[in-house]
Image 1 (cartoon, one colour):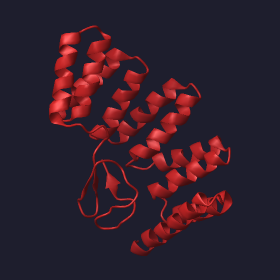
Image 2: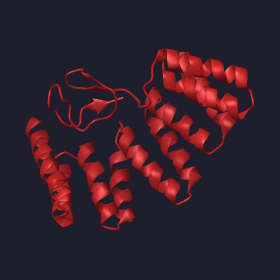
Image 3: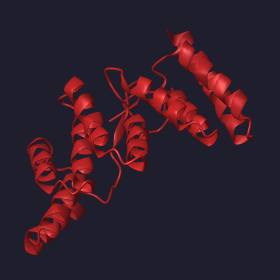
Image 4: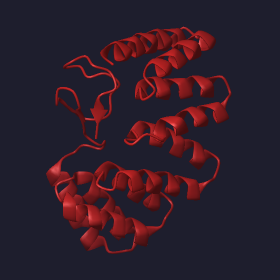
Amino acid sequence: AAEAIVLAGLHYEIGRERLENQDRAGAISHLKDALRAQPGFVPAALLLGEAHLKAGEPREALRVWERAAEGPQPALPVLSRIEQLHRAEGRPTRMISLYQDALARQPDNLALAFGLGRVYFELAMLDEAAEQFQKMEVRAPELPLIHAYLGAILERRGQFRDAMEEYRRALRESDRIEWPHRCAACGAAHARWIDRCPTCRRWNTSRP
């Protein structure tokens, strides 16, 4: 298993270099090899999808990302890429079901619950968004992003005094705008998802 991870990482690094040098065919080949060595290697799946997009193949990109999202622990960056494609194609119900399906597999994952609430908000489904963020607030009252969105919902409803209080809470907690992650191998904290932990140098270990 350790050798498979190293092999996947090497193919990923070569694929990334090939893509930077505009060799899309070579990049796609190496990134596919990375996923053969380690099917759950998220960095390779992300970059392979991007390579297909650059080649004008959005359907192939979607297939790659959907396969990556089928695992027991779907990564936020993968879900975000799928969401972007559904948004571009005007498919809001698929944006919602994407996070609902992921939450059904991981009901205690706050990052996925946040993603669903954010999609509700972006689609102007304010009641659903408020309910989602209020449920999250009970479990994680210190997370600033929750209060920022609750403030935005209240502002849209015209409840400006309550909205300002939520904004103040968000600012008191932190000025972070991305979901924090942690390395599953060494425990190092990351401000956001990253492909390789700078502390232990392991690939594909960033978890929300």
